[in-house]
Image 1 (cartoon, rainbow, N blue to C red):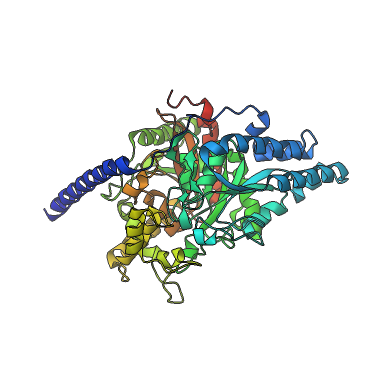
Image 2: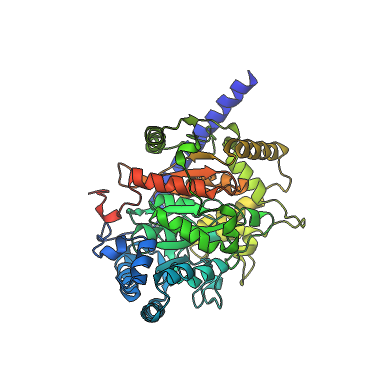
Length: 535
């Protein structure tokens, strides 16, 4: 039949694509610059303060059991120890942070209202944080990896950052991202490449990869990321930490570069990244400001009363790698644990529209806004503050070693040249039916497990050859559904495993409660130095 023939043709195309990719990759490896580190793993954590959640640290600081200066100094020491190996923090503000910590200690010394007043008014008082460099943080660069923005210094704080500072948090500095935040490897010509703390030859993810890496390395406890296609969840997955892409419209996206255009404001989300699941809710309630009230985050969640679903893969798109066997296995283990511990029945589903995740994401990202204006092109963003970028000429310059842009950015600008301005009616129909199906399925008590990515953290530059794999995360930006990324222990190679937990709109508390449960069941974040990755 025609369908059978089509499926056979798709399978053939898939095999052909993979063969071409491997040939390209072999050629790339011959010419690619090799990174060399004398050290093959991170030094172990020796200061116990680095193994406490932000909530625990805040409590100890308020109770004068530890000084904020001690905590901030402990994190500064750790950053100075690991950053030369991972290149995650690109600009620090250590001396300012120590002064702010000293002021916190003085404030606590003089506070007459007692601990409750401080907890209510300043829930993160004295706790250090790190921030993705794409966000405005007063006195810090905000280049998003563009050489033409290298001298730019923020005069203000992005609203989400301002709210965390107002809650008492102390920023230590800003962390690396991919050029213009549109790639899943944190690499740019201004700051270089960020390494995965579990294996320096692997990527930290993107675009919030510096944030993921510094948290995974135990050199930060909580941080700020943003996500338009998986930029919080992918780095959290590759670096073995927790992250949350909130429901659309809860946390302000202002104060980050580049600003979203077209329909993209509806897909971009700002959210928390952290090592300990118990910090997700306090961070989200602070970052959301008054909007956080819509989420009812303080309501108790009884996991036994929820309906759980597991979707093992996207149904086999020939554009995307098949899901790694260890990830399929990890998700099955989660299903078994949920059934054994909670007495629930987890229903396994296959959702055919997910096969078109990349096409749906690409179509919606390129759609004109409500005002009819098309979104800013990637080439236009690359030209910011400098000469106009011509993608084909830029590629030629890159081969000769003269381009001030990364290959990934040039590739994205080239792909845009071939994008049709007329969206496919078939793809729009797939998007509508998927939206309706998932919203009906999840309702107000449904929780869905889905792979975070088809592969465990790949080697540096590998994503250039599998550019559509991010569609496992990107589809949920288009659907506007909240997602929590959860670590699930380590693979045979000592690299983080994980899963996405998806719920209905504004039901963020369900996935956040599930994350707390999974942290207990699977051990949460694991310290990288200890995992005997490769001897």
